Length: 146
Image 1 (cartoon, rainbow, N blue to C red):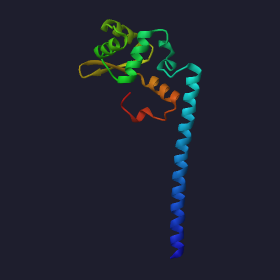
Image 2 (cartoon, one colour; image 1 turned 90 degrees about the vertical axis):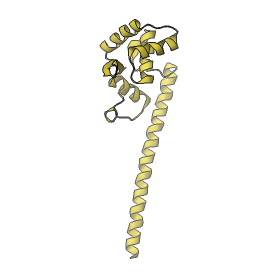
Image 3 (cartoon, helix red, strand yellow; image 1 turned 90 degrees about the horizontal axis):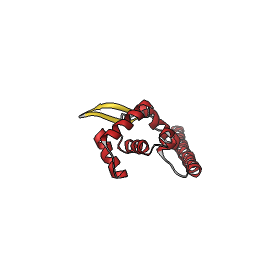
Image 4 (cartoon, rainbow, N blue to C red; image 1 turned 180 degrees about the horizontal axis):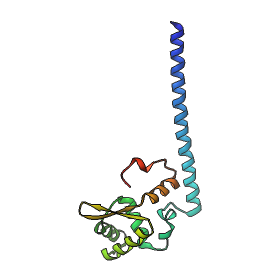
């Protein structure tokens, strides 16, 4: 009987030790991601989506549309134009449509059918690059958001 108790305790200790190792691995990964963010911030002076999508760096409207889609996940032209107007003071749906077409051609934005027409979202590749840059171990194949 005492041998069984000892074996059970050893098994419990092994389980606890393994859980501690897993927790330490997660904390270690988070610390590495934090240091990566600090380095990016020091190198570029901030964390912005245009670090992942340098094609929009010189186009303030396209850059803001990418930021809007990053915040909203999915939006139609009217929603993007409304948000753009709130952020920049002016916006037209025609300009938004033209910029979305450019962003689609570059593979930055994707178009999908929505309840009331087309909606736009960042491509999975852009989101994946962003998550890799900030060190988030999220696998997009387990989410339908992007």
